[in-house]
Length: 229
Image 1 (cartoon, helix red, strand yellow):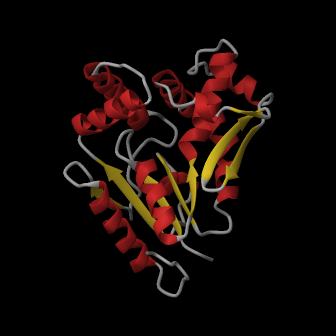
Image 2 (cartoon, one colour; image 1 turned 45 degrees about the vertical axis):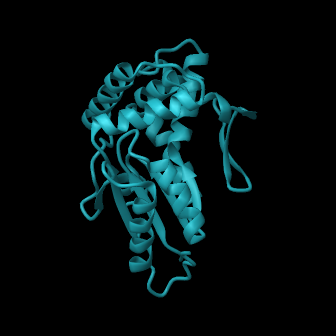
């Protein structure tokens, strides 16, 4: 089996950006698991539910068909047949994803979907519990983080590029709140796997982070055909 790479960490640490870059550099298939939870969060909001509703959201799951499809290297999320990829990157959906992900029924509902995507190996998956719950047998586990202020700065710039005008102070406050929710939830809290490599990107360029990740893949890929550039 080709290598499986799990990249976990808090919001704004650069997990998705680095996972995509690593997939291109090493010929791995990229899976954005956060987008899967965002899709369920969108469904909850559309149904008029509070995403934290421990009864309403689980009852909704039986009516949902959540699918992951790829167009080239781009991952698309389908909700009951509708492509919602362009609708799930707002602060509102980010908060909804965090709330629904705290519900054990939601995590159980999506767990097999994520594992199926990694079944053949040769993948890099990013999220918040990939190394601890989804792929505990992954050959390489990385916990990518950065200071709250730096992560908020990155998210602020990302939102501004998308035309979303949200004050930095508000982005920082929401990020700290999500960190609190994710790290204290009863089910699959955000934490490094015991054998994860800790990588703080606060003062590193994206190129330096990618260089470190490629080096780690090479170290773990002895005997496996990983064509890292």
